[in-house]
Figure 1 (cartoon, rainbow, N blue to C red):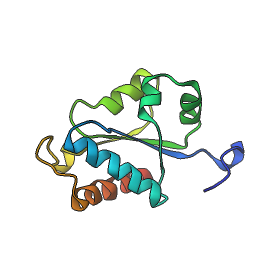
Figure 2: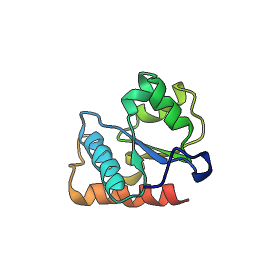
Figure 3: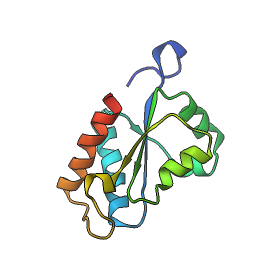
Figure 4: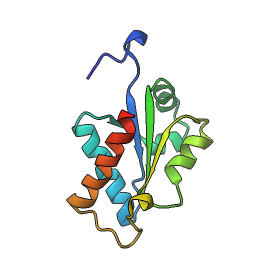
Length: 124
């Protein structure tokens, strides 16, 4: 990827995902990892945002864009970012794609559905 130490090259596109215990958390996590492998953005540490880890917060503040992927309507990722002071980010809620907690296995089909929508959001 590009040189991220130079302010002139722009910051990273960061992806924060739910990695919760439910099936939709697994889908969100797998989608973020796939987006990272595909070079669409870079998965980053949601727990570090919640824990207010200074290095993670600084890197996130320097990001060109942030995408929050929440597995269920509790919106833990969105809430974590907001509580850490982030106000400008895109948000993908898996329920909006018809993926319901407890009824959505982490199949390749479901993960690909999320990655396709997430890639569109990151690109826009």
